[in-house]
Length: 259
Image 1 (cartoon, helix red, strand yellow):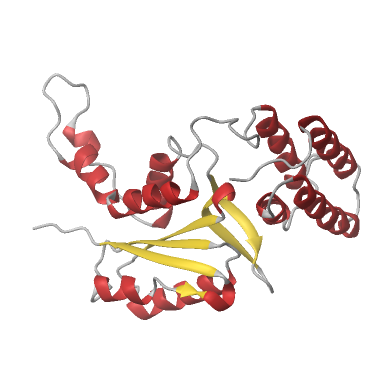
Image 2 (cartoon, helix red, strand yellow):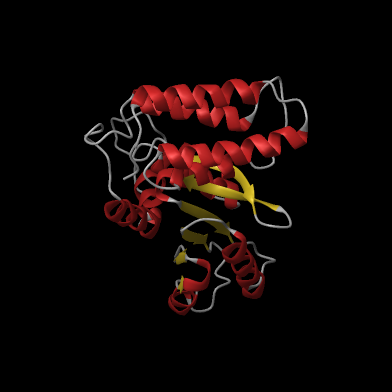
């Protein structure tokens, strides 16, 4: 778990100075220099590079909007977390360590369809106010729908998880569907279409796996149209440790069955 290696007061003071400096920026060149400096300062304040890296991801591509910066917003949230005691030894009693974090994420992804079955497909209670007809109107038509439902399941367990965050992929930016900054983890959501072929899906995964800047990447594929011929083989192929890029990749495929 990431910890403060300086006093709470000193850390907040240093971060507030960065916020004040960031709010004064007017040129894009100034912002680029400020972003680099801020990431380095954060690396010195905390026990590992996670916070500095997360800041760099959140601030990438930021432009001035309404006198504010995405990077500044991240720092303000960081101060709130410090005040809550998040980075102090024993400061949070409900902290989930990395091992159990991945156990929970894997279970959520592998059992995603059980939520759909229980919530939308099973008969409603006779004394309830939910109508079966209303529930049947909920249809997962594309990856944005799947992402929304998955994120709704994740947030009660990991409130700090963020959705649709842009990061630096090298020659162009990429959008992370769901990101867990504290665990250096990204979930990329895919949803098949009637016109999509398995080859197109593999090309997307290959590109994302190469460019995404995260230690752990989960590809969650809701194959509603059954374009993947062998889901077991597909998951095995795209669940490998890429040592050369220091990334761990896992793929989960859900193929709804109806008779």
